[in-house]
Length: 114
Length: 115
Image (cartoon, rainbow over all chains, first blue to last red; front, side, top):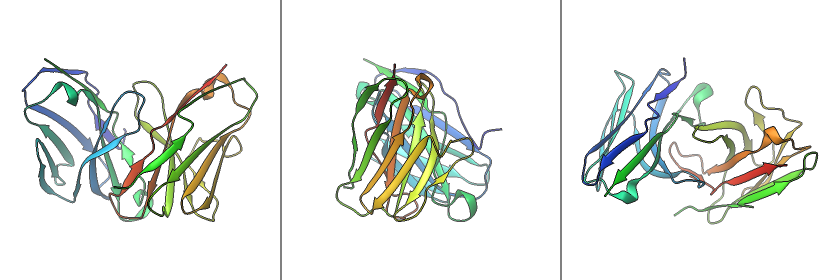
């Protein structure tokens, strides 16, 4: 079993839709949770980060972390064609072998069509 | 914001030759740099972690003699793929951090093609 599981999609939605992206994980040592966006043949760029459980909102993006269920989500409101990319969840811990190292999900390919 | 520059962005080399990829943190000192490999439509797989002035720590299954990592300063790390073979063709990405829990900045990646 992978430490981080993410549905690879692909996911295709119309412009303006609400997009929900999810990851589950098994390592209880993970404390930092991040979402990255990656365009084709580019490095990932950080979208959102959350420490421990809770919600965080930034513009059209909302990140949620439920540590009790080992489940994290990213919601994109009013999706735009420019949001079309691969979205990767990533996690790291504060102690032990997970300290300082990011573990990525497989990535979800999102296409927003006009 | 933090910027990481990675060069070259793409390279083609002949089988058996070596290729060096550079990763620089432009506006901050990176205590740790990471090297990842990414195959098409797959996620990033961590290859190794390097701290300035010390030997890199390689992940299980990564050949340290094939993928040489040097982290000579707080702003520069290099990955050298030695005696490259076609199966080494991939997208290589570096990342640098100041040590904060979420502060990872990625380079733009290097597409290596070995012919």
